[in-house]
Image (cartoon, rainbow, N blue to C red; front, side, top):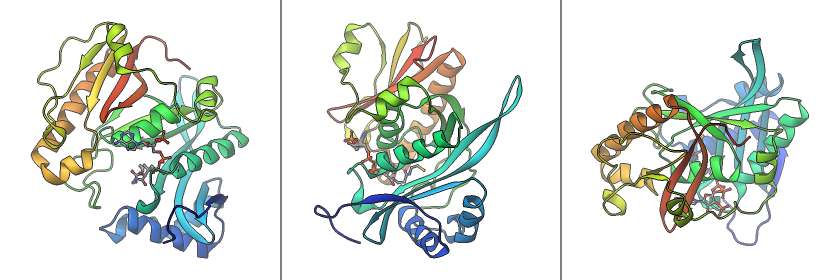
Length: 287
Ligand SMILES: CC(C)(COP(=O)(O)OP(=O)(O)OC[C@H]1O[C@@H](n2cnc3c(N)ncnc32)[C@H](O)[C@@H]1OP(=O)(O)O)[C@@H](O)C(=O)NCCC(=O)NCCS
């Protein structure tokens, strides 16, 4: 794998079977463990030949990241409507934190807009702070859908051991909100302090970094703003203390389900001095 910092990377559509084989290889690196969890080249090819999108980030001819999705439908009162569902975003471990994930999603956004589709959905583990920050704060998705054990028992190295609960996020690709977020280098800095001054309800974790515990009990949710803390590095916490990780999983399930039922919507995410908070707002989304 090429080393930073001097290599330049570019993004392009992946079309050939040979390039798709390298996407298989990248999946094995990012989700180590089971061969059956890898999407094979022939399936990628079939999807791409039928409206799906597969993009790669490359350093010279070496793949360092990929994003993959396909058209699908969702139900509305007026009948089924077209959307794009994004199934995989992966960046090689040596290349994380350099904007590759953001750039891949941005390229996907452009292509889906070009197809005339206005909504992209995908799922992610709501306890992963880095993913939350990228998806919600940087890309401008919103979320009010909590899925229980969406993928059943998962066996790969990142997911084994816990129910595969997920947020399903909505990326409304033609909105000002999304355009603004994508055209800014960094999200507008609203600090934790500002939320405290705005009388937001804070659900704060306690303890130190790797024994960080969720709050006990769920207080009545009131007001227009709620901040829900999650661990900064849930995967490390899971490696060192699986029972505590499980507590977090069930706490997250409870808190977000109550909040979504009460009409809250996740509209932002704050990552400040090693602390991670979802921002939930009541009422209209800021679309
Ligand atoms: C999720 C993933 C694709 C992100 O790719 P990436 O190239 O590292 O992402 P980017 O560099 O574009 O953005 C990551 C952002 O998270 C921020 N970040 C880093 N650690 C963080 C943390 N613990 N909490 C919150 N934000 C964090 C970075 O600062 C960066 O933001 P910035 O650009 O404003 O500085 C990559 O980590 C990955 O492949 N993970 C494993 C597979 C996975 O989880 N895929 C997605 C679900 S299918």
